[in-house]
Length: 245
Image (tube, rainbow, N blue to C red; front, side, top):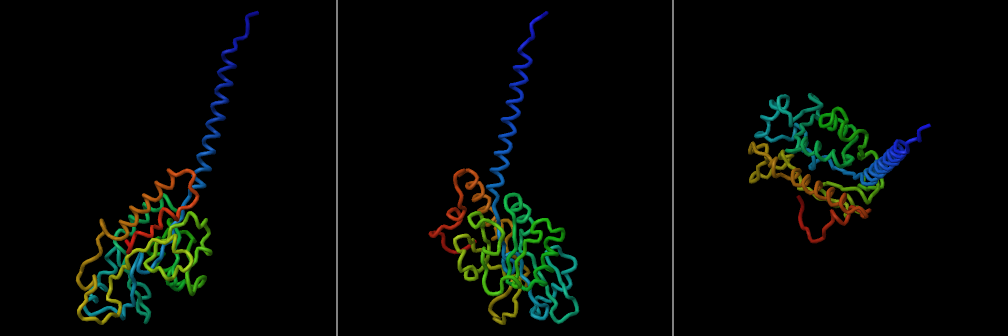
């Protein structure tokens, strides 16, 4: 009787071991990705959009009412009511959300009314692709903002907001963005003109959202490289950096 060849068994054992190692590696990678998941908390008004009551538009801004239905960055809602709003998206918003969604679980945190916030978000994110039900409004947080209400590890959260004071306990997680003001918004100062009145807008390619996105992408890369790092805040909070994006 011929001797049983051991090569096949040996190869089989090696294959099993290799698959087991690959499986373990995949699990480790999956675990690593899960551990490294970051969160982005975004303010709404003056950060992602600017909205105003139609009744507060200046005479030189009234032309926008005819354009609202034709433009992709300008909407009206509550038409015919006393509290009819006109909403302007900040330039680069859709590109920002598309790219940020690749690296962050995104949340909206606004001190605006719940009905208003959800109406605006239906315009921005109608399929709930970016935010889902991760929305906090004045209903849950009427006086100040806190990461205690955000379902996430505080060490892995970046906040983008145009206002610092509303975050009394979480400034180390905050990136301040330049306030976006497109409409005159009831300002009667005759010396100043709004973007809308000048028929101009914030830069899209080199504006605030574009610059914030670059910073967030850089922070994410550095956080991924520093495998032992557990806290994102030292990477985003630089006391020597003055001003905002």
